[in-house]
Length: 239
Ligand code: NDP
Image 1 (cartoon, rainbow, N blue to C red):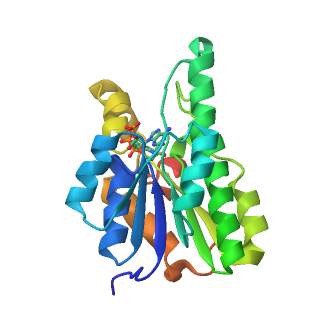
Image 2: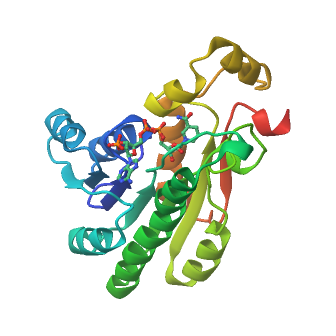
């Protein structure tokens, strides 16, 4: 039986490319009313052509005030996927202030902020909700050059405090996926072979592997699951 999100309103951040775009399309095809938030207008235009009915929201999440205004006006939503992120990989000793600030702004602060705006609206509406954060295997294991990748740690507090409002908060932690982000960081065959060797299933994740886990955690099929972290890593963490 396929998951249905009929009549649900969903916000997907970072929906212009890669995993976020695929999540937006999958949710829309499963009946949700999807708002696709991203930074590059051309990506959102092509997404709206591919999947009519998706509402584009062009915004740089690093801008706190613009986010407050635009996300506030676009809601309310019952479903939120915090997917947008930047990956600036630098060796620890070469991390720059600019890279650190950018990662903090987009990967940490914007997740908190968008979740606040959406959760407040859920609470005002009195509707149950589900939030899925896209983190990474890098949040669980030390990975070379990932010092400032800044993947999320405060999510269990969100789950604890929002649970009484019937808002579930879960996280998916993918291994490498060959999206634009994956290609920039993992195209070197030696580097990628070394990573694949550490993955028991012997391969990187496909976009659909991540999308399926996100949809499960958004859906009522996971109604009793909150505060959990689902690895989509082919076993990397246990290897
Ligand atoms: P992509 O780089 O392919 O896509 C990211 C999307 O997020 C783009 O549409 C991008 O827009 C958007 N975005 C980035 N910054 C902002 C911002 N400030 N405001 C609004 N939108 C923004 O990434 P992936 O699809 O690969 O990654 C999706 C998620 O999965 C991320 O959270 C990533 O950390 C995580 N992940 C990815 C892995 C991988 O190997 N690919 C592995 C593990 C986790 P634009 O291009 O216009 O900036």
